[in-house]
Structures are given as C-alpha cells and as structure tokens.
Image (cartoon, rainbow, N blue to C red; front, side):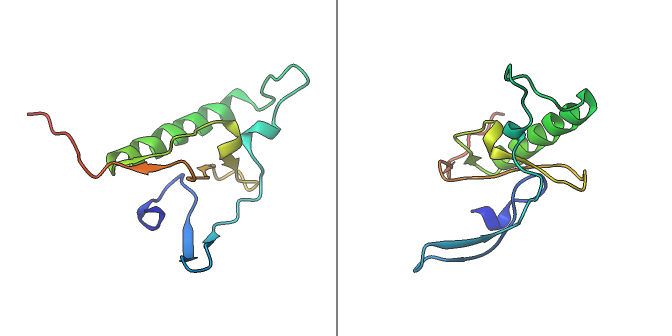
Length: 105
C-alpha cells in the first residue's frame, strides 16, 4: 500500500513481512506536536503552518483518491523536515484500504 504513495507521505523503501519490519524515509525535523508552547499553542510562523496544512490537504487528497484512509491524523503523525522542504504524513498503522470506489455520473 505505502509503496505507491508519494508527495507529502512518508516513503517506504523496503519491507519484510516475515520479520514484520519496514524501512521508511528518515525525517529529521520532529513532529508538528513538538512545536507547542506551555499553553499548547503552536509556535510556528503562519507561513510555515499554511504550507504544512496545504501539504497535508494534498497528501490526504492523494491517498483518499487511491482508496487509503489514514485513520489517525494528528500533530504527532505530521513530521517536519529540518531543511524546510515540507511536511510528511506518517504512521499508517491504523490505515485501511477501500477497494470499492463509488462513482457518480
């Protein structure tokens, strides 16, 4: 499932079903959840937040268009890249795949 996803979604390089292991992209910036003050307010600039939410919207549109439902989107599941190249949606442990798609005509 993850091998076909791209964009602002964590990349899967390899997996081993017998050992239950995944080789995923390393994202060095930490989660969006780490950027809160003592009042639980986000400390990132508005321009960064706008980019993050735009990218997450695009990521969700992409995966939903392929029948994948993440199932647990929250700040802890959004990783920020330290080189300021974007945000990545991760942890598809609760994801489901809808193999039946509805078409409207």
